[in-house]
Picture 1 (cartoon, rainbow, N blue to C red):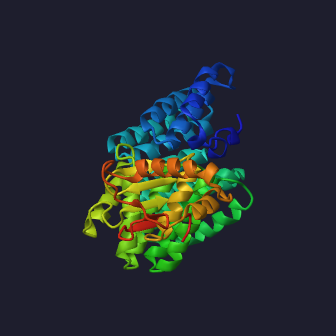
Picture 2: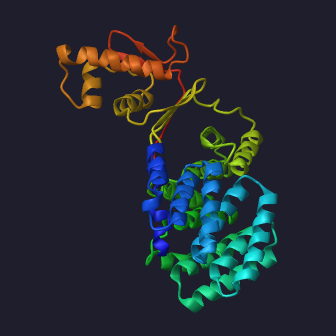
Length: 399
């Protein structure tokens, strides 16, 4: 089985519906191997942040891969499991994984396997055993260079970046990131590249280059859609929020931290949720109090202070209406303006009056916290307007 069949490139998880997941299960016998099918399912659930199901399938896949002595695929599974354990702060599970790796190494003589040392090195790094982790990662890189395996070289270099960063050896981390950029021009490892972009932004921030760090995080955020990984979206909101906080922009910082807090999966992203909560608490604001309405154009969501987040996926007209109203609180839009700006049509009373009425009724139902008493959208003789006192924020992909 070739490596690319198991990589993140071929598994756009967030695009896959639950029906799609069931189809994979039903077609398991038609796939190349049972283990491959288990891995696909595990990876799909992993990207959807359904870690319990992801672990179930990844462990089943790892067991079969090990039995077939397909070690590269086996370590793909174990690496994913390790990341889940770290994010859920399950130290006992990390210890069990380390023990299993040690047993496997003895049984199958994996002294010459780069991915074994990479996985073990990351697990040791998570325990802050940096010296041992570094030795493992150097060994991983040496073996990858020896076999000229470019993918393994990239993973080993990324491991060194992580270990150097955790030890505040930032210049060495940047050196390895620059080496990785050369490889990323030759081979496509989008998810690994994004994780290294985040690491680079963090390093810049540690060096006091806050504006450069902010630009890096924004550039990385614009790439997140390429992998459709739900974790990266949440973590980058957190990274942006904490960077704005260091730039003394408390209002924008609280906005992004609030968005991160709203989107984080507390059960599965326990570590990240804790980081977000600690910063929210440190700036002394309650969750989401700065703005009444936050329109997230990138994720197609509207967040109302009392109602919380409402998904607008597929509701393109509503999204355009909200962008219009939130961009000009207090401004009255005539029916003619609304029809032209939202539907790109010339206004005709017989065609559009009912359409405008019905659409605005739907919009009010989405954002108004009290059905009996309007808070946001009103009508006057000029047209329809958003109350000028409403605090709004529109988040595009980039500012």
